[in-house]
Length: 466
Image 1 (spheres, rainbow, N blue to C red):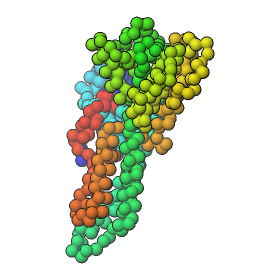
Image 2: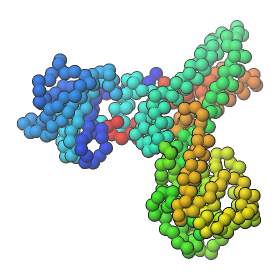
Image 3: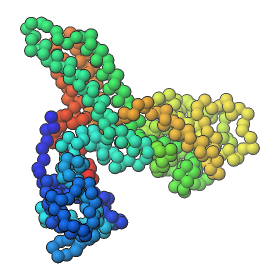
Image 4: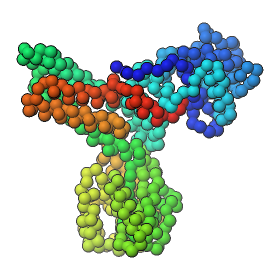
């Protein structure tokens, strides 16, 4: 059950981004939307009334304030329940002047509407059953998406991908929980309504499904925020030049003086539909310079945070011993399955031919480039794209919301407690508590279980007008 109610005010807000543009859209939602708007709208053709206006049809006319003409506008009426909020909705398309937008909103408020709170349109869509909670949250992710991958992930969630999965898991657990609760009612008769063998099979299924969703969060989060790529290496191997070549702009200062980069430089770039967050770091070396050492320490922080690590080396000055040291120093990250370590052999323009031992010294993914001449950069970007695809989850359900992740983690912990309880012959009434906890956690994801505080926290982060 949804535990939140809201007042029946008709709300209004500008639905398009702030600023001046060609057009702007102002949205009203509520039972008085049509009455308020028709009193302020003068159509160019026939007179419109509540009885003859048609839903989902565009009308041209003038928006007025008494005798004052404010703008020539289009209005569209969405009759309940066939609207975003399931209430009567009016959208006014006006010219993009900030003055016009503010004036129309002001007149509508004076006529009986109320300024919408952040996310209130989507909140009403949720409370009216148009969207479940995870779908409503996906609306915000869709608006914020900046790459094809983050857009697709938000679209999958908004279309109910994770909702269907969670609802199915919750229903299976709920059906069995009902039998457990029934056993409690007949505890004195010592009967079992719930088949224990079937329940252990269900527990195994729930654990596997929850673990799959939980493990997808690391990838979902980096797709949403941008996949962090740390560019590391010794001083003067061409890290900053490589960053500039990838971004195709002079983002970082390039100098032959060692230690030029003293702090991490970040920029994002979309490659193959994925948003990468490239981080150029200070050169790794021993230094007496306090400021440079701070930058080097931050480099190691960025390495720990990165999903992909590009180790740039000067191919014209490389040896088996150099590579062995790199492999030993970064062994922990190379062996970490959540990261991908790539050698970037730079400065091939300084070689007449590759060293004879070159095939023996590289054990990992390696790409040969000239960052200065921008040669083979496409090979590096291809490796980046393929690396992300390897990280990706095989199904379409990827968790990218930290609230969902925490709820799934808590549900998984509760399921493990249930399993441990049965294995250790814990009384059924205590096991039932953990089952209820798992059901509660899953219910918070889709909105079967909500609180005013939870909804306020979620929808308060939305933009006004959505």
